[in-house]
Length: 176
Image 1 (tube, rainbow, N blue to C red):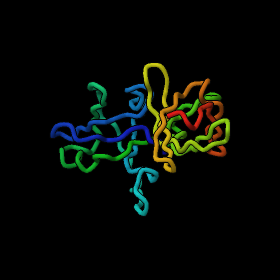
Image 2: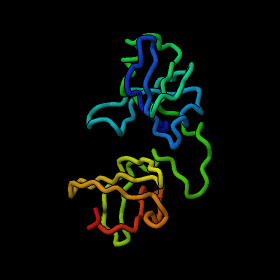
Image 3: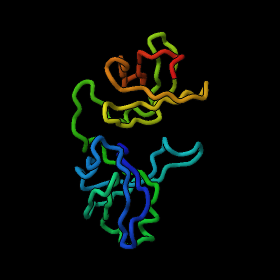
């Protein structure tokens, strides 16, 4: 499963949900008529188990500001919608379009280790987000208790090795 968003909150009293997509385009999640809701294992606190993914069919959806407002089949009141609050939305990896070389799904980057050209560990990718100019990697360095925001551009990101789980960047450890 590839996480592509999360349920923010119920929307109204008829079972609608407010969704925060984590796709490149705000309506990218609407390309899929079936979603799986649950909690991704890597987002849980240590010792907790992830709930199994449960499939839902999208009945109708619309864009509202920076969110999607969605009605799922079988979610018919505020109580049912509240039960889905904070759950992740995913689709099976085989439902995603094939990527060309040097393209990556954000969810594949999360958790990868980041090292610079001097082989210094800079931390682990915790998130990726888009800006008007380029995508940005959020790199957490738990050893030094700092966070770095690295532009995901060719001048900075030298190599993404999905086999080893390492992203090599041209970024000095002293730069914040």
